[in-house]
Image (cartoon, rainbow, N blue to C red; front, side, top):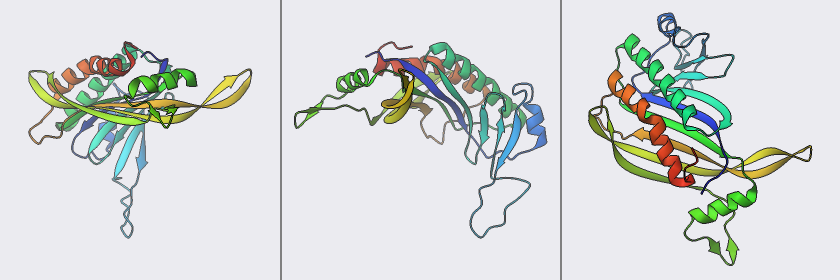
Amino acid sequence: MKLNLNIAKLRGSIFTQPISYSPEIVKGLSDVLPGFLPSFVQNVVPGSIPNPVIPFSWELVNPNTGERIQFNNIKIDIIQSKEVPCKQEVISEFANHCSEVFCRILDITGLSASRLAIAPTLICIDDPGKISQFARSVYARNSFNGASVDNCVFNNVFRTEEKIGEKYYRMNYLANFYAINRVVNVDGQNTVRESIAVDFDINTFINDEYVFRKKEIEAFFMKASGMSNSFIDFYFGGEL
């Protein structure tokens, strides 16, 4: 069923070894991430002495757009917050950006990745009646004690095989639906309405034999918008 959807957030991820902050890495990424500034998050274990030189995690932040490249102990995330209509070209542009940045990081560090992910978050901007109608179309059992379901809170995981580059990899397709409160303007006054959001997360299965280098990362993110479109279309019937 079609709903009016906005993209609220986009995330691309690679799982790799920890990358500590260094001015050389920031400089090496400056042409693909112009204007990004380093920021540091020191996660301190109680009783330990913080290391002021090498933080546990750090990020590069674009002060103009709010985009963040987060370097954590097991993965690197590229995160963009959005408030735009859900269109395939938006996800495609983001996926190309992820491919360029992640490949440059592997060039600089000489590392490879063990998992890859693309994860769009969507928010429905339809009225409550349309949302309830969608919820009833999703649930096979849509009434209880004479009352019809009015919200949409659930998660599904589908596991499939996808060809990335020259090989097939097992993939997780995760959809997590949940309720949110959204502020809307009605007759000049702000009011709160219940709506739904959904986190889609398409990622490679955990497998010690999976090794992703530049070629595979480029192939994954080249397919990312198509995989996202297909999964969103499964629920929303050609929304993109």
